[in-house]
Image (tube, rainbow, N blue to C red):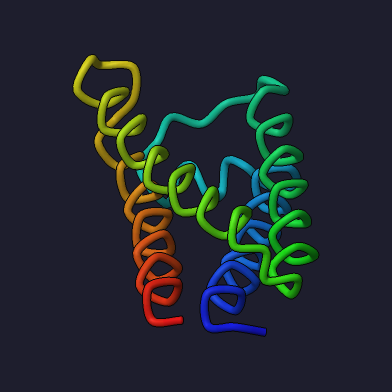
Length: 117
C-alpha cells in the first residue's frame, strides 16, 4: 500500500470509530465538544453514514486508486470549509470546526503523500 493509501486507510478507522460513537452514544461525544445534546435520530443516522464512509476508505485504500485517493482529499478539505460556514452563519457552534480540522489534516496527509509518489 502506498503512503497515500495508508493515510486514507488509517483515516477510515477514525471514521469507523466516530461513526460507532455517533450511532451508539452520540451525546457523550457531543457534550465532550460542548455541542448541544440531542435525542433525535438524525445524529445516529449521521453516525451510520460516517461508519459506511469509513468502510469505503478501509476497503478502497489498499487498492491505491489515485482517483479515489485524490477525491478523498477534496471531500475531506470541503468538510472543513462547510463546518466553518455552518459556524459563521450560526447553524453550529465553532467547536464543530475541530472535526473539520481533523478531516483537513487527513486531507493534507494524503495530498502530500500523493505528491511524493
